Image 1 (cartoon, one colour):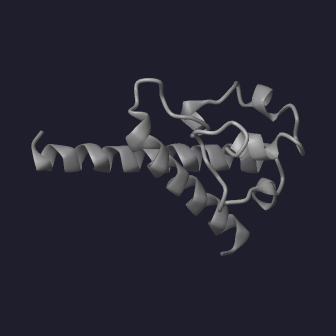
Image 2: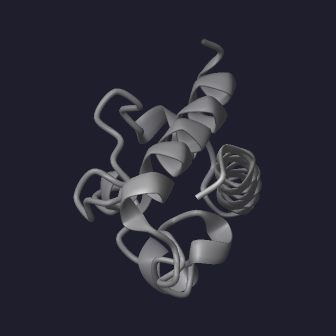
Length: 106
């Protein structure tokens, strides 16, 4: 594959991940007061249902997954099933960390 094409694909994945995490964080802001205080950004892993955003909030807000309509890719809680897991999860994790740390004041 052409390097320019690869760069454009990566850029698109980054922008999409940032947009999805931003939408998810805003959704959480409206549904779960101070949700970011319950998230350990260092262990955050969107690919793991125990350490993803929803997974880390389940003990505090057990019905959150239902309210979110499942692990919604539109809200950045998971990747779209057509995405390439190996390339998408790291970008989505980074985007979520940015949202969390910004709210935690770090």
